[in-house]
Image (cartoon, rainbow, N blue to C red):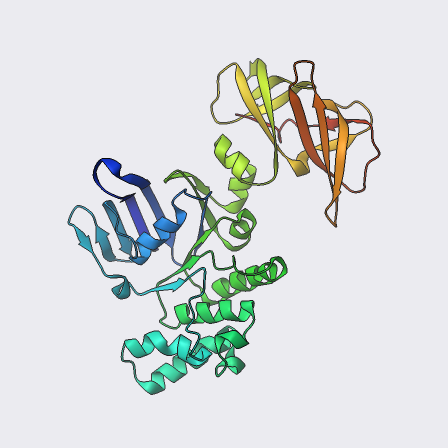
Length: 359
């Protein structure tokens, strides 16, 4: 069953001739127990879409349904107030009351709903226990770590038993190490409680780790959607291929096409790639993930030869940059991972045909 349905949603900032369209006909569904990540660059519309679902932004056209309730209908000029939508919302800043204890922060919304004191205490105790905060109920936000504050914000969103929880970059305020731990905790929590969640993030690793499905937004429209695996391994467009993962980009001239096999002339040599995106022109862009490039000190198939420029230590591996400038001052560069630091010199960089995509 669909917990959230958005259909042909349009939203502008401003009005008249000076209106700035932000959402340009977005449609999506969130199924019960599913986690969907809204991913995209700054200005793509992902936070605006989340805020429109929450009732914090007013769309111009389209519909929004939460389960079987219509909460927005542009044709009927109907918009349900945010407080009646029964959604849990976790803000990027957490927005905790600094003068209230953890217990009172979580209980605040229930008190506004005039719920009985005994039921409030039971609900707050339950949700704090679920998030490992049961012993921190009497502390104030400034007495908590960043990760604990984040969990209090999640507890406050969950205490209503909402149909859908909305997460606006919930991990962005944490340092890198804590983000990894919080990412695992959040995924485990969502699965354990069977939550339906819509999460905004600009971090593709976070989106792939936590979500069941990714919606990649580009300039107010959905560029592509699918499982994290399909988005990473089989991108439909050049934008998706470049946004997901760490990539090399090669400009090439098409020498031959044979079904899905495309022979490209690139700086440094000739390679065969797999056609994607429906390009039938004389020029193409080759995209290959860094981890797919193979380094050799002797000639190999489907490879180009380049001198090593530098290597950077990443802890578990080295990232090496190979770079050359041609006679017409065109610079070609490729990056690849190596298990150890390489000696200076020229190397053959193998680009496997199935991993090199021609758009």
